[in-house]
Image 1: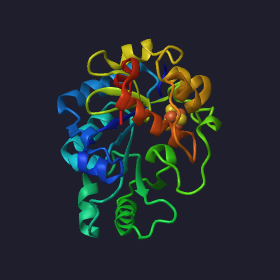
Image 2: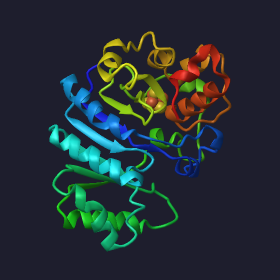
Image 3: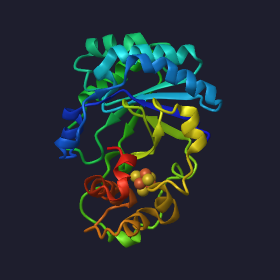
Image 4: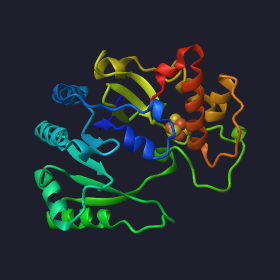
Length: 269
Ligand code: SF4
């Protein structure tokens, strides 16, 4: 595994996670990235050789501005391109938006502001304020719209049966280039698929030991997409599903619940 970017999930917050619609309050964890782990993890990422980009993400990285500031400063000092992905809920007024962004001016090479997807019933004034403040402060800024893989579900309406989704649309499980590290140290190759423990084993060992062809979840997904994952564990999910990632998300939920062969340990949510 030769990642080119590492994405740090600074916090998993139950209120946010559940407000996003998981409906699984009992599974939501309130955890924050340990401050003492930030710098060593970034140094490890640097030691991997190919990583040039560090992205601070999470339910909302600005929920822990102190961690975000420490992490961004450390990543910048280590020579990474630094990015932040945010929902901009903190940008209540122009003054607040400027104040929140001030510590990052000159350090961040991309601020990605998530907007509500197409068809959302409301305008998104906070995203506008965050984008305006970033432009004023010459922080490179970009708007993004969460895709189905991020949200874990596709658009409502049309859909198809599970057997059709016989291909994973991303190459990340096969050849991970973008590793996510969550606040507990779990390393994910794609949303929900854990490939190792950065705090226990270290990023280097995780990268050296991951083999998509023997990983209990990645192997079927690489071989035949979520349909193969369903077959592998004898699941017959009720459809319709709007895309492969929607089906994959539902299957991971089911596997978390049933935990066949102990695979739940390899699933994050
Ligand atoms: S099918 Fe699953 S593993 Fe593949 S990109 Fe979608 S969410 Fe990720």
